[in-house]
Length: 184
Image (cartoon, rainbow, N blue to C red):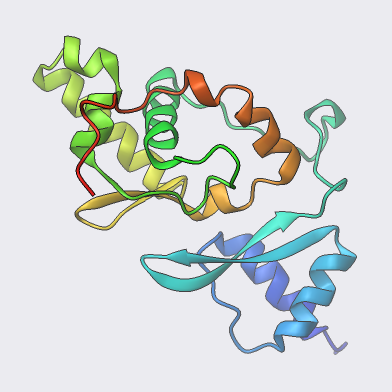
């Protein structure tokens, strides 16, 4: 039987399990070395308030959708995008900083930021909103701790170029008006 590099094995486990894996049973430096060799980077994050690690891409090594093979992009539904835009708009308060971890907000804050939710405040609209929020949480784009919504560990993986693109639409993200902003 051949020896397997424990850093590479831990990296493969991390990639397979997703963003909530802590570096278990391996030398952290070996994992970081394996990540660098693969064009990846191990980033510190939190999951459910606990320290965790997530895989990101080194600058210049991000996969390109134009490459086609091996790059799968799941298309999000319109409601998922609207709800995530509201989460991002409410939680990302400083355009000059990285959006993660952002400012925690309540579900009500997010609902207020989504204009369509105020206009169609019926059970069906609220149900769709909650379903979208649950999908975003399962995909780790956001976290809900029972009281607050936080930007999730996947937001932590955004590199400088991706955040720069988002800064271009920062003022267009749904967010709370000054009158609706909660007291500190």
